[in-house]
Length: 289
Image 1 (cartoon, one colour):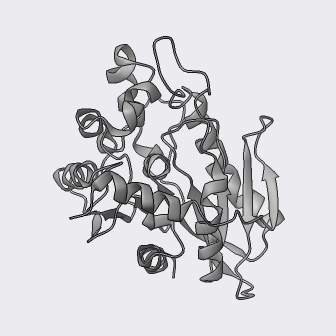
Image 2 (cartoon, rainbow, N blue to C red; image 1 turned 90 degrees about the vertical axis):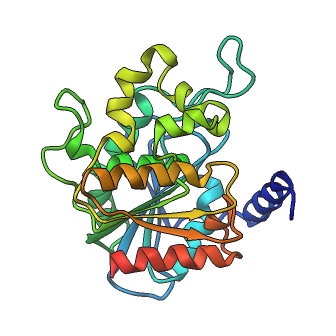
C-alpha cells in the first residue's frame, strides 16, 4: 500500500505542475487588490453557457491564491462552461505570535469578500463575459474554497444578526463542494490543515460565537441542491469531515449528494490530467444543464 504522505505529495505535484491559464477578462468587485474575479469563456464558442463560480482552496492562507486553480478553471471552460474564478482576502503571511506558518483567514474580510463577490458576479459577468447565462449558476470550490462555496449558498439561513445574511436564497442551480472543510468541529478534531479552522475563526476564544456564522454544518437546511465530491484517500481534508457534514444535513432533513472516489486523494479533484476531474465536471453539469 502506498505511503499516504508520499501519495499526497505526488498528487499535489501533479495538480500544481500545469501552467497557469490567463483569463479572458478580469473585473474588480472592490478596491483591495484581492477583490477581483477572473472570467473564462466557454472554449466551444457557445453563445450562452451555464456560469460556474469557482473558489480556490489553500486553508484560507495568503500563499495560496487563485492561480493554482486556473488549470481546473480552464478545464471547465473546455467542457463548455463559462467560469468566474473569485479571489478573496486571506490570512497574512506573517505567523501569529508563537505560530509557525501563515495565518488562516481574515475575519471578517474573507467572508466579506466572498459575499460581495457572489453578489457582484451576475452583473460583472454581464459586462465582461456575455457568453455566461447568469440564470444558471453553479457554485464550486475546493478544500477551504469548498467551505466558502457551501457557506455562500447558505447565507439566507445565517443568524438574523449576521452581516452577510440574505433575505432569500441566492439564485443558484446548486453547489458542488470538492473535499470541503464542511464541518468545523470534525475538522478541529482531526487537526485539518494545522489548525486552520480555529485560526480562521480568530482563536479558541472566538470559536463558538463565530462558528454559528461560518460553519456550513450549522447552516442547514439550505434548500439548495448540494453535492460533495471526496477522495477516499484524502489525508489533507479526510472524508470524515465531508461525511460529518452530510450526516448533519440528513439530520436537518436535507439530502446531500455524496460521491466518494476510490484511490483518490485531495488534489486530483482539481487536476485536469486526473480522471477525478472529469467526475467533478459531470457533477457540475448535472446541476447546470
